[in-house]
Image (cartoon, rainbow over the protein chains, first blue to last red):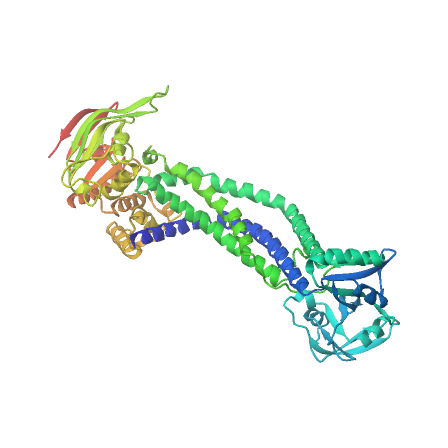
Length: 375
Length: 242
């Protein structure tokens, strides 16, 4: 109990000490929290969105085949299905209908898609982001303007639940018939084709064969999409971190100066404590607690704020840089995901150096003869 | 009892600014007595006090402590005098914490925290229960008429109050020896006389008191048992009154 009481007593004095330099310590904690907040926000966002991407791609087709005309995406004729289906190793080929629809009232791009077991004619199923954008709920109506400017009214039959809101946020599921009515899609054509292959290691070979048979196509393998997502968000996080690095550097200099330089008053206090019977180790403990209180509470505050910012406030502060303005236009909420290893790395990069920087000069000051306070 | 044998203290040894502060000092200080180290500035009083109080090690010579001074020290041989100059730093810290209470010339109280916290500070590393420690500190401060100042900050106190807080702090671990360095240097005549009354009380409680001073109010006081005169780092004379 004695050792525990000793530490409690030392912590008690540490807190009193911190309160003496209230303004300075609060300012330091604010800056510290801000730095952790920025770093953790970028980290949480990049990790969560990459995680979302992998969730989406887990169930996505192994190969997508698009057709290009003059470098632009064009509709795929029905007979391509038969030709690609004959390639050895292809398990199944299917045509997909999907497209983008800009809703001027909501100011958002929705993705309209036709799926198997989709809604009946005149009905749609929508993602949560769509419901939020148009402020509607299930059972309400949603009018969509067709290619000649006429309104077609759809009843919202249900909303889409998904492991990842990124998959379904802006999605409107519609019947094939209604899709053709909205977009004037010609019969015998698809937006693109999706393929399943028997042996996943043959994807690249099959993609090459498709390209050989139909030179106007662009086969996209699932792994390529995943790599693209990773690169995009790593690059965006990097850009933000480079911008923030100046602030980070300023903080490091500020914190190092504060933590490592002891004022004459602090040195005198250490001398007094030694003279009245504190051991060098007691003083190191005191300074350890001081550093730990400041850095740990700032770290926790920064992490909690970043968590709220990314997962509940849609990363509103860094949105334009991190998300991009066109790719993910409708509002969506990320599924909370935290990578323990990254949080630990952040902890060791922020809390540990600060605590060490606090202890070392105090240890040096605490090894002087206590009689220095008498002279 | 404190036994000093041929104590010498040299500062900056081997450098051009080498300086011998104390030399050839042998002294035996009895328990329960009040001793004054008297002498002009630079005579070595404060350095000697620091050595007696285990704050600094002598360059040469030996210090032996016996009796109630070494009670409760795990490393001390029972009954026999303990030679302390060769002890590791942490043992010296324990002696300093348990056996000695210090009253410094500038009081050396910590600003920004309360009177009560200042008094409790020397006891924190002992690992005492916080509640009983707080009660002990409150009782001592009450004895010195400082009940109303428990929550006051040090910088709000008058000179006399600050000194009584410094004395309370010196007593928190119930040490056998009180060491005071020029305790009246910053006090007027009335407050100096009050300080000597406190010393009388401490003596009555069986404490050994060692004071470094060149103030006549201190060394002419009737409660002083012994005056050791110092000059140029050496003992130049001695008066035993009782």
